[in-house]
Image (cartoon, rainbow over all chains, first blue to last red; front, side):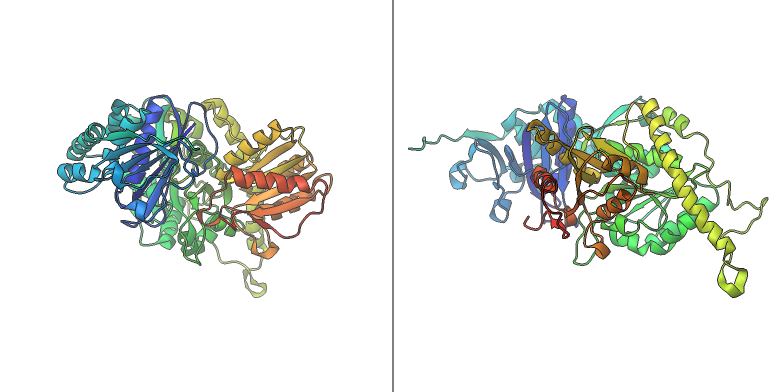
Length: 190
Length: 407
């Protein structure tokens, strides 16, 4: 079982990203439960989506408290939300940011960090920082759990209109290509 | 009907609100009315989209509020139409006046309640207080555990509601947040198969507003100085009989569904690992998945624990519950709402009442959790199992345990 917690803000498409990722994983034969949690539809408010992947059927319709991977599609969110809460040892962070690894505060539980300047990519493609599909590309690159093809197919099956679909396909591709994956070396405890 | 419904058992990856909307599409209603309210909103948005796209051939009425939504559907149902809506929380509260009349008029309207907690304090998150609050109004109420069950039960609801021995409205309830937003892989039944399952539409043979067959609908009754209470009393008696008849109809509808589509759901009450159990936890709705996982883990440790899940809350399956209670020596009930009059949850209260028909009175503990969108996880169910096991040897507390009080 692999657990992913997706953090974003209302309006960035975190909920849709969870749905696209679930579709792609199911197409690749995985069992998935994805639960986006949001209340009032408020642009800018922090939202989270929980996605559990397994090769066996699952029953528990519950949130995720000990993620193997945190996928954060907003660069300012780590300042207001503890995105690393409960993270498992040796976990992975996939983060939308223009900063370099050295400029980020990464807790010891994180072993792999994937960074993607999704705002720059999306401003170029959409003229707006809607980072969800770009960060799905980053997630595919970082985890290798889902193929770019399956995500691309899932985008085709979502309700994007013609121009929007093309742009999002490009964003997905660029997110995949422009993500830097870092393995964090840590000294053994004395 | 659009070509998208042609392939047999098409696979969908969708949430419970979309699943409910597909269940409505497959049931081919004549009229859908709706007013959006969190967490139901996307359900009526899907239906508006399906109707706009021609996936569903129905009238869509976007009314100015929930009172009008259900009033519009009453008119459509009286004219012989098959109808659908969905609401919850404050929307359901605003709908109460026509909601109360619908079963009294014996209109087989199907309505999803995407259950959520009620204001105040301000809260749009999941909880079953809305549906539980209206449990005594005369609608049949079924609570779903999974997204697939939401779709399948939405279709079954029409078969139950429109049965001539029932003729009552049905609420198909699914938990706000966990089922309304929860995305999984499901199968979409074949339209032709659903058409055969539901049979010919025969909605309001008893009260149809038909100029060729004039009759009084909703007559003036009652009063010792008026027309007298006899007719009114017969209305109420007939409703209660329809409710009782529905128990068998619900069982048959589920049985036929399993035969035709290969998916079976416990129609009234599910008994999970109860055969050799000493004690059991009782659940309702989407929490049961985590509950079953915890029961399995406890079984692996050698504890003889089972789970009882309520699907049909109204009418309450008294005999099925009594039979389940006969198999254990203690029960702990986890409610996702409160029963203010009993300092407990409503399923706890129902369990106590059904116990009168069981062989003996056994310890029964009330636990309340999952309010305001709170999660009921393995951790909460481990506690529920632990607290219920204590009843086998110790006293039974009269106070409820509030499972999310520290979350």
